[in-house]
Image 1 (cartoon, rainbow, N blue to C red):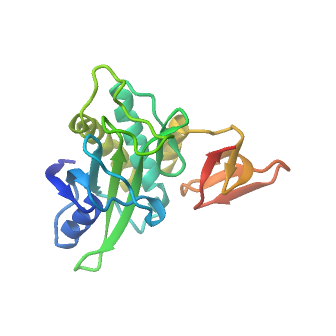
Image 2: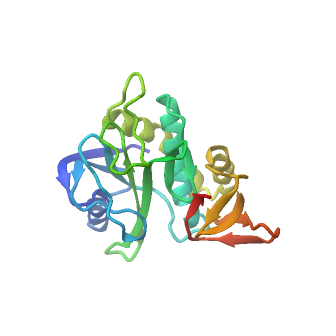
Length: 232
């Protein structure tokens, strides 16, 4: 995959810019980044604070969105980011399904969105928001300013684009086993007492479609495709 990058001083949302470009005919591999976002988006339509010094970027992915690996897209992108940050000296884990964690503090997140093109085909954009040298917006957030050497947002994006092609290839080839294995190698909180949507559980694994498998205190196992995992 050859990536083509465009950068703006400020946009509303890099995901929206990338989706508009894809809908207008831009091919996969376009990377949109910005110094700030004025209307950044998180999961479930939450606002995402995007100040100078963070990485705010979106990529048009070369994947088949209707395929069986659709639910694995945020996990695959998250694993690529974890590996890229490891290359830069940061130990980062992925909290199912789309949060990047340093310890128990949130470093950033991933937002995958789709839209139909003029040819009635779905395109997929993966947005990433990472606190790099910006002040973390909330008390339980983290950044990368303590690393030596301290990376810039551009350094982090370059590292991610080195790691992303392998995970995109796994998605295109439908290699769900590989994606799940890499996720489990980087998973936050697996096998530990957690709360899922406020209920006590122990997360055990991910299913072949990316769903989270948890066990409750009575030993009942359940599978979830949406929800919130937190430490008890």
